[in-house]
Amino acid sequence: MGCLPMLKLKVMKTFNNLKFEVHPVTKKGIRATLELKPNVFISVVAGEGFYSNGKTGVRGPITKVEDVSSFEVGIIDENLPDDQQEWDVKGWMSREDINKLMIENS
Image (cartoon, rainbow, N blue to C red; front, side, top):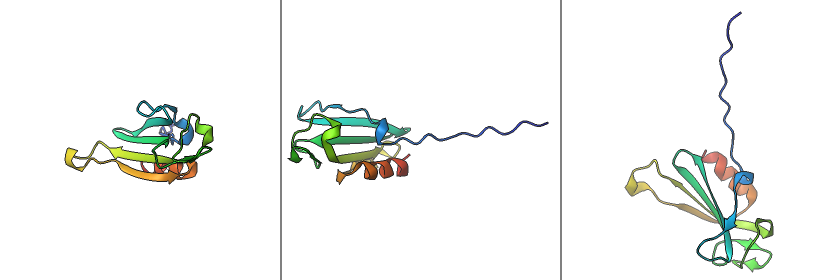
């Protein structure tokens, strides 16, 4: 009886893997960052001054992720040459939109 080949399962990261904290610059917002794959990062923010929406209105202050309906999201691929590295930023992204972006960039 031969050995079966080992399957390597890829665990997909989703919105639920993001750990939000108070944004260090504004204090009236939240942020989470996560490495999707080696040197590819996602940044998700919401709150005052960001392209987001929540209980306090469009671009209003946010202190809890539960109060947010849309987020500002940026992705960067640091595997690219330095002169090609650039944050790709999108506003007003839903949790479902963020899940799709995370899967596409994993």
